[in-house]
Image 1 (cartoon, rainbow, N blue to C red):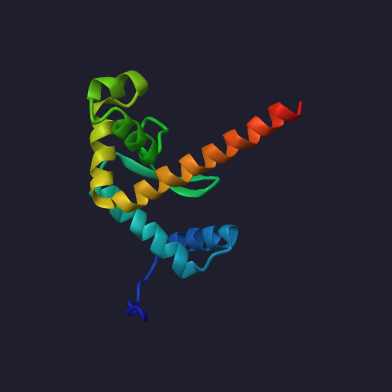
Image 2 (cartoon, rainbow, N blue to C red; image 1 turned 120 degrees about the horizontal axis):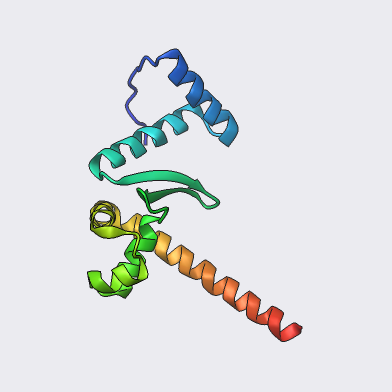
Length: 137
């Protein structure tokens, strides 16, 4: 599906930085710019959330904790929404961090659910592989 075109004038330093990111990541200028704009809008909609590079790609994280939103939501679901239980598991999260993660989850649940499922599958595969190594030794 074709997307409408808009012309945008960028300050030279901003354009140079986007071009640098595009070269480094081997992606198009347009793709990088769209991703940056989307992240900026998400951070504006969900205060307390930022994005960081991880081996699996860009990840939404809770400010001041280093935790991915998916990690917070996974543990929150495991605690069945009990904030006291969650505080024992993630004592550095705090009420504001939890609120930010829940707000992000409210807006982007499918993305967060996919990240939880992907990470659980990777953990199961790693655990199965480690079990085979122990049996072989």
